[in-house]
Image 1 (tube, one colour):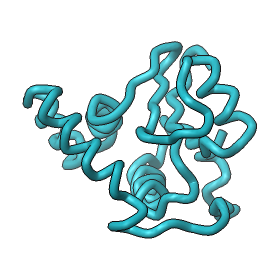
Image 2 (cartoon, helix red, strand yellow; image 1 turned 45 degrees about the horizontal axis):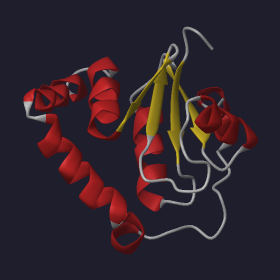
Image 3 (cartoon, one colour; image 1 turned 45 degrees about the vertical axis):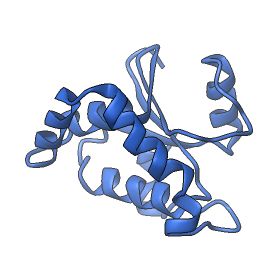
Image 4 (tube, helix red, strand yellow; image 1 turned 135 degrees about the horizontal axis):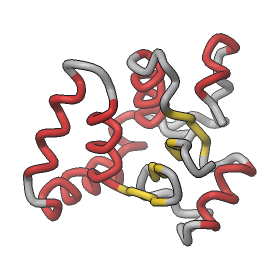
Length: 132
């Protein structure tokens, strides 16, 4: 796992699943591995890095052995995607307090705004290489 880039996401969240679809579509070389926080592997990674295994308030991005959360995670992922998406990482120049505030507002209301799946989404067979 030392050189892997893992995105831990809430598989019941429709916004989070849309984010994963976006990453898959713009990561043809499969730099990133996706892992549901509800899965055994996701639960183990959350526990390993000291995150809650029941309250999913932020996506967690793990690069090597370092976890990133909230807007910092989003900007790190965008910076590694191809053009033009990597340009969005310029927003990391804004104060983290501001970008995390916005992230937290969306995250807190994501089920209301975007909906929730009753069950975790099963990935398409063609996308299996993107998952941990």
